[in-house]
Image (cartoon, rainbow, N blue to C red; front, side):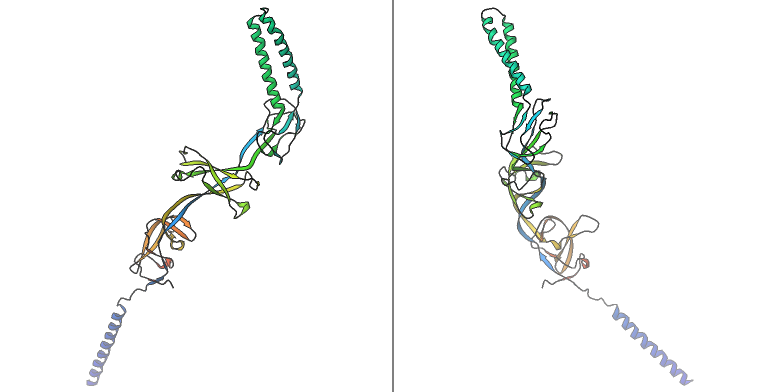
Length: 342
């Protein structure tokens, strides 16, 4: 009996010890564990002077162009003296029309002139009335206009110095509605751009503009602003600008796709490395993580111009504030951070 009692007391004592050890172990595991800081690299927002350049795409056009079309229809074309690709000078004879009608009208003019000259002394002597001599004079003047118009349109001169870009008839054809030739002046060219109203005071006549075309990759051509539209488009809030491009060697051609870059001046801007700026998933919002007092702060910002590998922050960040450039998937507001830029 005594032996059984002693064994019972020993078992209770062992159970109590085991329970005490378990309580100590449980107490130890519930003690708070210090949060590990996220290692990040960082950069400071810098105040920099940036150039305000704006690039607009457009099609290169001839400086001037003309359709060569006689005013008199129904005439045969005697000779077309030029072909597509030929260079012509202003005033050069390029088309000769059939002269038959002109010669007939010149004969009529000579007859009417002779008749008028004979009737003029008769009128002075009172042989015919004032009304009759006036009628003869009006008929004579009308015939002179007919002949002058035929002379002008029977021998056609180039209206400008340029290059022939289209020919729609052959010698001997009867002239119809389409222009006989099309001529473009390409020793100068022009590009038109529609510029945002915020730059209206920044663009001046004579201002230099850099022109680039894909076919001459990396090469820049210099143009100048030659005309500024004084009125803005109410729908788009833009104003039209015409740029003239010298092209003496005719390397550029109408129809080429061009990029015109304007320098609108300079201004101060807050800049950060582009890898520091992140896009919010599912939206167009941009954000950065600002590092302050050993913690990360999520902050929405508005970005602006990109200059090389730097990007402008228009709103939401000040110069000298520090932003994270790595470890974005592990960051959130209030997260402890350790900066390592080595």
